[in-house]
Length: 229
Ligand code: SAH
Figure (cartoon, rainbow, N blue to C red):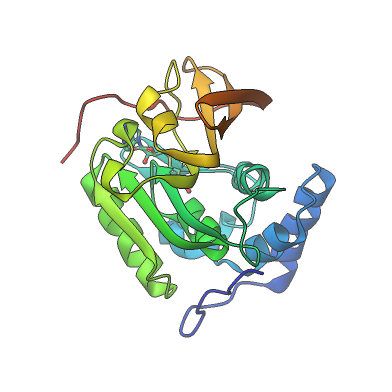
């Protein structure tokens, strides 16, 4: 079961535009009702600058400054669905611990937080991480912890994780992330060059890792070993 975000004091946008977005996600094959409900109820407009807020319920990635984007709702829904569906460690619809690499403005973190008891998220651009913290606090999602760091190294002290969601694409899957998966844990990550990547779902079974291709996607690159202040 998913918990809902605290909407007190947050302007509601028209229910119709949100329903239209959910309709589009259904058409594109998103089947997880919990995920669709959470996308419907999570106010994506608060993650955007005022000038772009009117486009918040379009199924597109949008700029958030610093050359980065808020992920497309379809991608957030697909990654969340693939991580949750049939996961062996679900407890009442929730995972114990999830790591996100690439917080951006915090939208994916807000969505997965409604299916997790604890979310850790790492962002390499400090002002974005600070903005995400404010957004998540505004929604009352106090069980999401963000830090400014190089997320390609994961967050070892907090692991192992039932799921790791990477919102930026490396050329190859960082070993560190695979090693921080719990047994049965899943890592979903776009892998490849700047123009297009394959979204990979990696599942840990003891010391072996099963790899499935989900679909072709386009994410911003995952920087390795560099921080922006
Ligand atoms: N999760 C966001 C998507 C943000 S875009 C959302 O829900 O919309 C991906 C983010 O990954 C960018 O903010 C970028 O700065 C960040 N990023 C890229 N390389 C990183 C790294 N090595 N460590 C942490 N964050 C990184």
